[in-house]
Image (cartoon, rainbow, N blue to C red; front, side, top):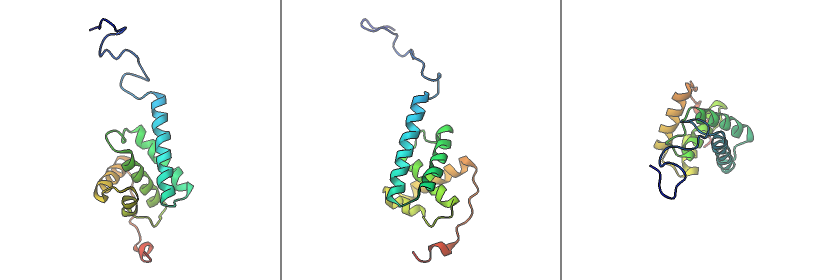
Length: 135
């Protein structure tokens, strides 16, 4: 169907941007840049170092490549990436810290983290409770 004042057919998907079903390169780059900015914001708020930001951004890149970000809020994925980076580095940060910082329900955040960990196939070690005694 072509309207009287249209140059192209309606709903035909006229222009191809990076393939029929994928993201365009620019869209993916924008998503990664926005994710990195959000990771830096949260890490700055929680006083995490740059090595946590870099590790979380690498995880976020994998999440984007495997379409884990689709249908999920960016804040949830960012928190899952940062928490995973903290767990890998054996930091003393807990999931509830991210929940408080981002004002997200800890159970929603935990569900996102568990799905993220399962998607990556990570086997994270149990945390030594001694890290949390002084808290």
